[in-house]
Image 1 (cartoon, helix red, strand yellow):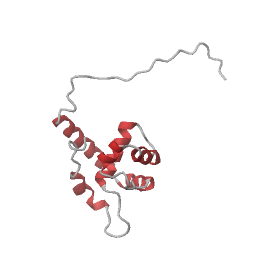
Image 2 (cartoon, helix red, strand yellow):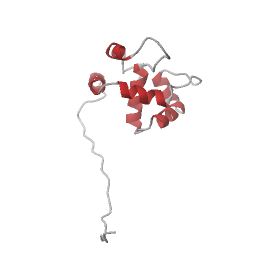
Image 3 (tube, one colour):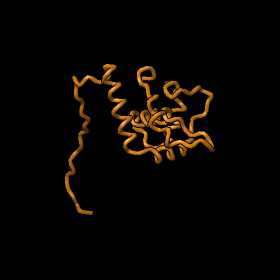
Image 4 (cartoon, helix red, strand yellow):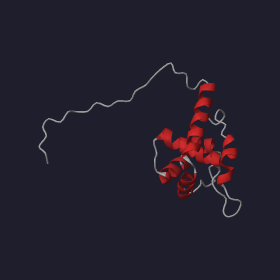
Length: 127
């Protein structure tokens, strides 16, 4: 995915959200890659996402980090998520989906539905 997914368009769409002073913020491309990993790996906690990625060489490679390089703090990801507008997330989704279709990663030939079997409750006692 690293070679397929070009997110450099994010720099143009996020430049107004980043200040020129203070501590450097998380790179927008890295932030959205974190969000993609979190979605694909079903990780909703920023703290767990950083921990998960720090233990996986493939994730570090995708994010552009070396093994000995520290990942952005989980609190930085949480604050960054708050400054991005919903429209920016929609823009990224549309662009990423278009890239996946263009690279034949999404073809629409198959549909998968997740389901789970549940045992019916025998009786309801109301308490």
